[in-house]
Picture 1 (cartoon, rainbow, N blue to C red):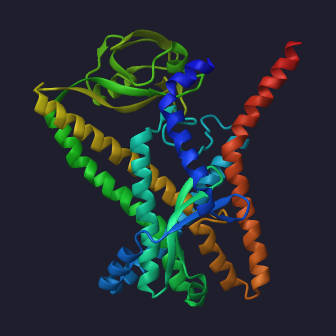
Picture 2 (cartoon, helix red, strand yellow):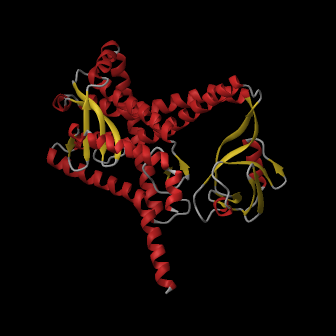
Picture 3 (cartoon, rainbow, N blue to C red):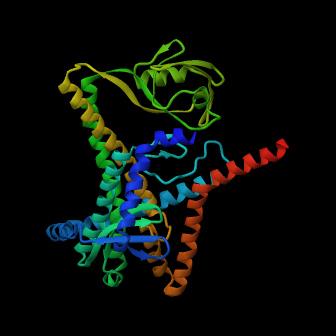
Length: 401
């Protein structure tokens, strides 16, 4: 089993091994902040931030103040969503899922989808550049010096940063500070919208070059779900269910809509047939549910020439990059608004406590409490499902004796 996993993830293991070796050999260039944060400071992009902020100073400020409203909408939304998710996990609500770090090359826990290694790092690089440059450009628009930029390690998690002059920043009004803190998450939300808009023409170009022959699906990694239990492989192309022929997403959705809970199905794919029995859908008990994600239509080229093959492959790659960049970008935007000490949302919350409680010491105490609560929620999402699984296994082991 270990050798099988090593073989499956050889490229990923080699890639991260080289990264850690590179970091270790250059460890003297990293500054340590606290017990888990390491910063590699550069001057990358600072001239660009200055140039943009000088040329568009007024519209940048206006966008920054507008972004405060958008950031607070996101702040309250993500607080509600994550607290509700933590409650559902503790209460063992059906369908409740935890969270996990999203690491290129590895599966996303609970989804059974692997975040691609190369496309993953390209998308993360784009997202981090947009996020940090937005902070830097907004700070420069308000005449705050950017001392450095670079990459950061928060324990094993890689990130990026811009370092403004904190003394100058603290002297600015709360409105200005809010606009600077909000700039990063809001820019990621804008990037999400841009990616979705770009998906339309790219997807249309792919569709115009191809004809559908089935639907590619992912398998939710849960042993209680029919698709997983049947052995249906990840990235299967479904071509039929019972008497229904599946050529596109609409035909798959229509076929599943005709099925009922506890109905037996024969799912035909490009790799063989699989028998399963449907469950009740978590959101509608009258509908069938088999535990799959719909990725998209599996299509074949209308014209199988070298030129069309190359163009199709390029468009598929671009579309996958846009999909992952959009997905990760909006999630990073929201997570950055959740108050957990180092996030933009945490800094925004600190400003609010300082406005409410004139006593800075008292404001700091409430801020630490709120962020500790936020950290607890994150830890529940990350580890509670694993702890529960281990406890159930241990209890089952004890009972068996």
